[in-house]
Length: 603
Image (tube, rainbow, N blue to C red; front, side, top):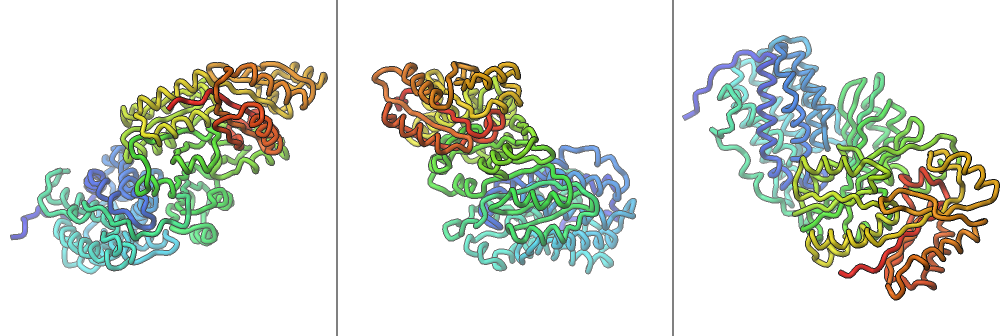
């Protein structure tokens, strides 16, 4: 027997807001099921996280629930969702709410017929937002659901009846997605985004039935089909590495033109929003090019780049899931070692005039140093941003037993303080350490942790090895041109003038807290090279084997010269040469050399 439902003849702003909140909470409680079945557009296991994160902003923003007009309430929902949209599915949800608000624009309250027409607009807008829409996705379920509303709303004047039957239509459409896309058929799952939309409808229907946000399930939800994990053995990995997102603020933004411009640099493109504010999502290998193109449409905000390859490796790869190793992009370590040991890196951002670059993602080290030499603009770096830290820690906390986060010295950046605050809000299994070092020193310490994790060491054992390396580490720096230290405030103008006048070349070093200080001087570059090598020899413990790392700012020739000398003089058991990231290079300038060293760890 069909359950008796209370009649709902109109929806105003308050009812609309409560229904949306009920749907949001219903989905948020089922994020894991969505992550487990996520295989499209890439198998990165974050559809639930992205949809839940987008809807959480609605759940956290209670102000729109007090608006009596459905026109104004739907605008508030659309604006909140747009600002919070995450990932492909989150962006489509945001566009759905945007289209819904456009359809509800002239109403204070609506009938079933009015709402059905708005839902059709929301469906059409959602399809328009995607560069290459496919059957068997969230778009298909939204379309089938909205078409049913349009066809039946004139006969069903009661929202409770209309929503009940439209939910059944959406569930049938959801089941069909498994057959509509080959990737879903191979994985034996329905589309995760489509499942998420059905979850929202289930929450709304529950509210319509109960008249309140009741967590008790009075009907059979579609959760059963979503609890099984997808079969990922036959799924191909993404051809694009970076999931790239941002907000663009401008005037009369042509969303169609934006999609056309981006068609050459990636796929899974979603462009949502209004003529003055859009959110862009794209999978690409050139996030820097994406942002460059988007600057032609307006100012860019909220840039976000996730490494899809690493996410796939975290979930499905042959990695140690006991400890996630996280560091920042001040940690200079060769890319091949980052990949080999599955090291996660949180980027710093560099401001060059009006343009913001994401370290190592939207600008290479070589490009950065070339710009430094050709421009009078002084680059400025900021500390690690809380959203970037939270996104990374949320991710590793989900897929690893614990997280070890190694951050650059507190003496040079307050990033470690922010990291510790963020970690406390997530889990006590996230350990943040101020490494009291920078550059290749941080990179070499990160390598100690990476090898310890690979060897199966516990978290406590790994931390102890890191602390021993920190205690014994030494690091020296040379610079080619003192003007960058002067310009960045690291060296006084008067001292710089005297040093240049006498052709003195300073040898710098890091103190125990990681701060940079002068150590000695030499006459000319050749004298400086001799001084650096003799300093290393004097500060090394006789009879000990050493790990050594050499970093350079667009000065590989000199770095390789040092490598040859060091191999001959010290026979290190670990030695690598790498580029110094722009975070430190922005202060020291092109030509900088940094060498870090400590006794070989006893694993």
